[in-house]
Image 1 (cartoon, rainbow, N blue to C red):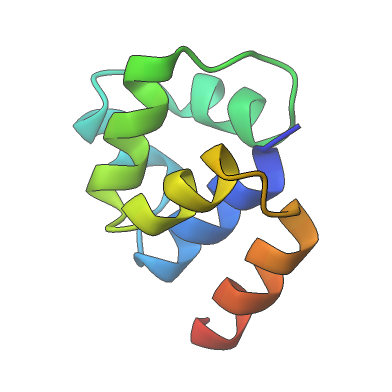
Image 2: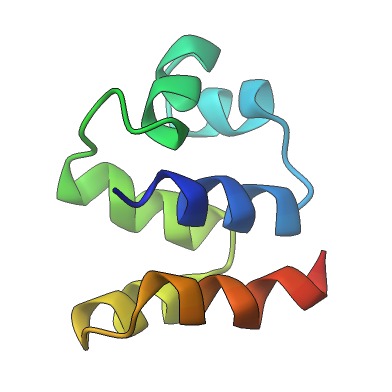
Length: 79
């Protein structure tokens, strides 16, 4: 459900799946599954993902119910 957001913030941070996996103490396969909505993300990993990609405001927007497409539109110009 949030896979596209996760991918977008990772790319904005300039991180490869492998680099983010290392920082999350995970593996590239899991990162791919999260980004393709094939694996659910626990809240701790979600928060750490946003911290590592310096995208905490995205988490706040999601908590306040901001539409995912609106979030992506605000992030994508930064790519």
